[in-house]
Every structure is written in C-alpha cells, then in structure tokens.
Length: 123
View 1 (tube, rainbow, N blue to C red):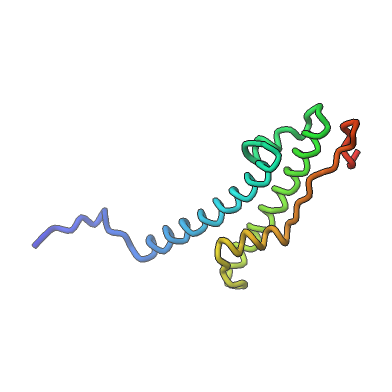
View 2: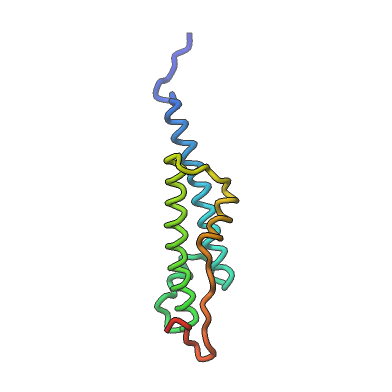
C-alpha cells in the first residue's frame, strides 16, 4: 500500500477558495483592461499613466488625467459593490463580458472638452 503525503492533500474548501479567487481575478482583469483601453484612446499607455497627469501644466493632459481618475474611482466603486452583491447572493453572477458592458452603462465616461487656449471646461 502506498503512503499518502497528507501535506499535499487539497480539501474541497481549498479548491472552492482557489476557484473563487481565479474567478474574481477574471473580473478584476477585465475591469483593468476596460480602464486601460479608455486611457489608450488618447495614447496613454495605461490608466495609471493617464491619471499621473492630473496636476500637469498642460491643461488638456490635466483635464484628461482628472477625468480618468474620477472615472476609475467610480468604476471600481461600482464593480466592487456589484461583485460583493454576487458573493452575498443578492444578485445573479453576470458573465465577465456582460459585467464589463454593464460598467460602461452604469459608469459612463466623456472626455473633457478643452478650449483653443488650453483651458478645460471645468476651470
């Protein structure tokens, strides 16, 4: 009879936790891709790079950085609340694609307008 190494035993609870973590990572990665794709529309290499321009002396960059910063916050606030609702069983689990589409509807984004002198419409 073979000896079983109990240190390598994986319980059903551990498998369930790993599966939940992997699924959560899929949603998180999809949200990050959405954020990065929006920033890429204006040639930023990522959302993090874009938001670093919030206090830039170039009014257009500053306005875009601020708008993306605010939108990123709204997106993650919404996404976190909805995924918590799924975990709590108070809403059905959407597909990742449906969830990303839902975020686009619930957290719309519009690029800020900057006038010909470089001032944003928010100043």
